[in-house]
Image (tube, rainbow, N blue to C red; front, side, top):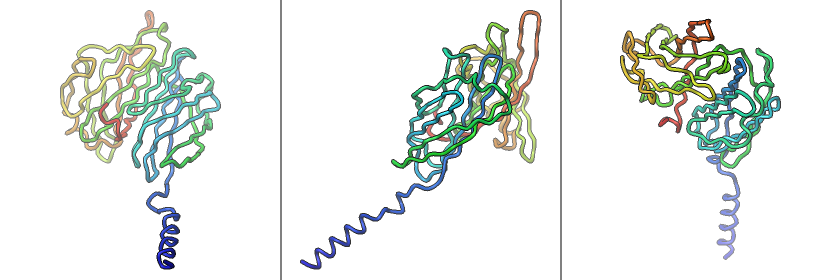
Amino acid sequence: MIILVGFMASLSLILSIPSPLTTVTGYLNLTANAYLGFGNNLLVIVGTNNFNFPITELSIYIPRTGTNITISGKIPSGSYFLVMIYQGGLNNTVIIAPGLSVTGYPGGDLADLTKSGVAYGFNATVLVYDVVKRELFQLTTQDSGIVYAVPLITNLSIPILGVYVFQMAPPMGGSTNITGFNLVSLGQVIGEVRCNFSEPIPVLPGGPTYFAINISSINGTLKPLGTWYYCNATPTTSLPTLLYLNLALKYVYTYNNIVIIREDWFPVYIAPMQMSNT
């Protein structure tokens, strides 16, 4: 009986010691950039789960703008995630978080980010394996052009490039049409592919204009727009690597009798995670 009691006491003591397998270690990495346009503003948040367990909830509060959102969904350890908040005014806020759900007050007033080249602090609270972690990050601001694009690859085994294009000029100020794109890899070996559309793609106000490109083919159709594109080379054989990949959008902006032809460059985000089916 004494041996049994001693065994039970020892077992109880062992069970009360936290298992090293369930100890939460690591950290959250967030990069936030606000692009200030001509009446429209865009906030892009890119994060990495550097914890040893999945993130199940992430709350972000930006005191300067009043933005207070909660991001829900399983973000695996080591995975990247992306959140975009586009605002043309207090009554027009669009939030895009592929593979995740967002609740709370997503808009705030991004117009309160009045200066470019300024850093603002914001708070992040993350839930990992029922453990709450709190961290402080910085949001930086910069001026945007007529449009801003967020190109994204979510599945490296299926080289589909999804592109979100945002109109940063007020819609009553003119119209924007995309005529083509370039892809450039800026690794040790530089490769470039130039592509044109069979017909211009209008950039719609009030939200992103989205299209997907199969960058492994020389010709194809933009999904879901159904517009043909044709390139001067097969992208996967002309581009030495998907790392350091950049996308250029060629577009025409028309305002009354003013016509501006531009080619703006944007970095390609590679964020493989549970949103790979988007």
